[in-house]
Amino acid sequence: MPTLSVGDLLQASGGTLLSGERSLSVTSYAIDTRKLSAGGAFFALPGTRVDGHAFVADAARAGALAAIVAQKPAGGGPFPAAMIQVDDVAAALARCGAFARQRIRGKVVAITGSAGKTTTKELVAAGLAASAKVHRTIGNLNNELGLPLSLLSCPDDAEAAVFEMGMNGPGQIAFLARLADPDVALVTNVLPVHLEFFDSVDDIAAAKGELFAVLRESATSVVNLDDGRVRVQAARHAGPRVTYGRAEGADVKLVSVTDRFVPGAELTFSHAGQSHTVSLRIGGAHAALDALAAAAALVACGVSLQPALRAMAEVEPASGRGRLTRLPGDVVLVDDTYNSNPRALASVLGTLAASAPAGRRVLVMGDMLELGAQSISFHKEAGELAARSRVELLVGVGPLARHAVEAARRAGIEGHIAGDAAHAVRIIPDLLRPGDLVVVKGSRGARLELVVDALIARRGEAA
Image 1 (cartoon, rainbow, N blue to C red):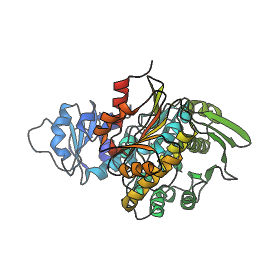
Image 2: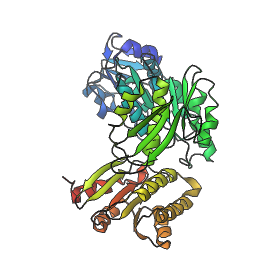
Image 3: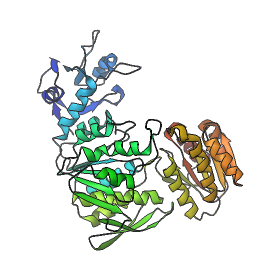
Image 4: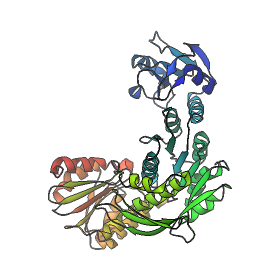
């Protein structure tokens, strides 16, 4: 278990001890009382709708040993045994995360990018775990609050750590990178996502490239040579690098990809004069490229590649990230509902086109969000691409996906429009036929996991 004393938290936060003993040991950390464990510390963050200070008594009832607060809570308690007062609870959480980072032994890997960062993180963590005890970002704890919690939750005996970093504005990656102080830093790619918050893709690249810009010179950057914007941003780091991609001269050079959903993608690459082939349990060429990035990060970490690659090959796709379910009637369901953007959708369509199901190629497409002024044109292009990718049935979910369906219909493809996920749940099961390969993909806000759950519940998982 990760253990810090109240004195450690006091020193790291720069606060004042209101009550309790410095010697008390804290073993977990939370900003949500529902996720508190006995013996934990509660950071009472102010919020736009609720103030964490109103829940300090709840934290005590949940077993919190310590609370970090901006002011002493009102009322009669109960209160945690120790309370630390700080000027800014969010800033104190970040400082405590940075303090915890200093205790991590072994390599720390930081990963960001427009797409594939979570799968890449899981593959890197699995590869490192072949020879070390590894801590990694759990769930979506990848922002200015989640990363400090991930750092604080790193077990005392961890020998390596892998952290994911997300953003929706400039300056955020730099902030996270300074907290994590990685030994190895990877930007998977730069794509037209979050355009609602940026003026251009180049601005997105500059924000992602903050990871390279603040990387200490002794650390190693992992550079995707096939992404021009990543190459430009990588120049912001003057230290050692490991390169990967199809480009000649890449340290980890992609030789071939077998693009398929079933049984999973396969890639072959060369490094240091040796050829390596990895058969994944995750489908799609995009997963193969994530695995290539992970292999390059493992090279940068200096681990033995063969056992690491064997461990990577055993990684199962997480829920919403390409998980495959076989349904009765030889229907294959691909759950890719965690998120979407034009490039990621194009990759999925490429895999659909390369697949040869017994039945039809079916795409359930939710709205792609945060694309700014180009949203409608991106969705129209998606419908046209679906038609060229041999999709035979397209179901669009949401007001933006309607434009994709209309474009696909003009190209002669059967298309149906659902206003939202609940509507889609009602119509999709009756549209499917035996042997269909069904890919469900959309942005988080589309809530297409409801469609996946309904299909599994209604048709049942195949034995």
